[in-house]
Image (cartoon, rainbow, N blue to C red; front, side):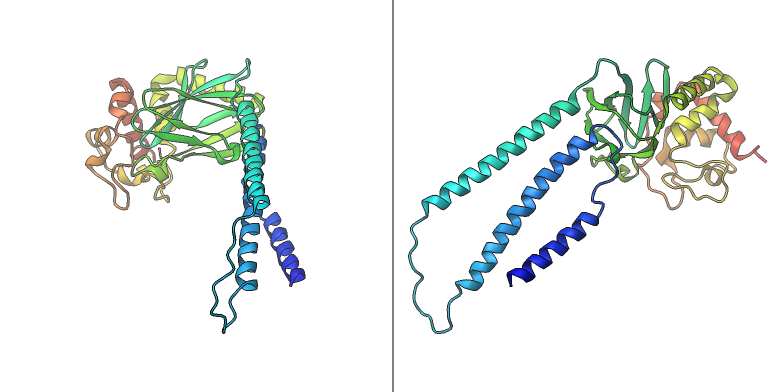
Length: 323
Ligand code: CUA
């Protein structure tokens, strides 16, 4: 009986060990968080197994015989047991608090040398501003192995910033600036997820986070700055890339679009008036198969008249005059 239990337990533990429960670690902060998580999980699993095991054993071992009509023997406490079940949890909970406190201090620490990126959350999109480069984009691009302080702001309701591989998570709250320090340590493409139910488009509130080498990052910054400087003719295109491109496809006739409709379809025969209205008041007309309320309604305030004209002009040219 005990042997069978041991065998089953070992087999379960082995299977559990082989399952990749957590996403790959992509930031320096991930290690400490994972250790705290596993510390709590292992303690919980152990206590649960102990309580469940003793309960099942007691139910089986001390069950009443079919002809037993007597009351059970009166039991008046057990000092040793009571002391033990007070002291053991006290030690465990204290250990968890102390360890979590240590990890929290480590991951909250802002190194003197760090980059700052402003993150703006709104229903239902993320934008990222690089103050030194005076650059705003729709995707978060960071150099590897360099600490970055994200300053989070929200325009409307509470959102929450999370990249699973980096583990670090922070709310973006209207009216205040919250902070998050991350040191990505693996290049690659990740997904920024909103983890606070913020409205109809919550599930679609995602952005790309790209971690690249220092060299690639500097090149990217230069490219973005040049594109911004070359404004004029290219302004519409760069606005599209930074603001619209994470949800809408363009110049890809086969696509239906994912979060938002493929603009080749919905703007095919549109005039400037319609394109403008679709940007400023997106719910006025909704493409078939898509939900109202998902696209941000703030572009009318966010963009200047001149930027709006450039974007409209670019879109009309792209869907109509392209071929
Ligand atoms: Cu923003 Cu959920």
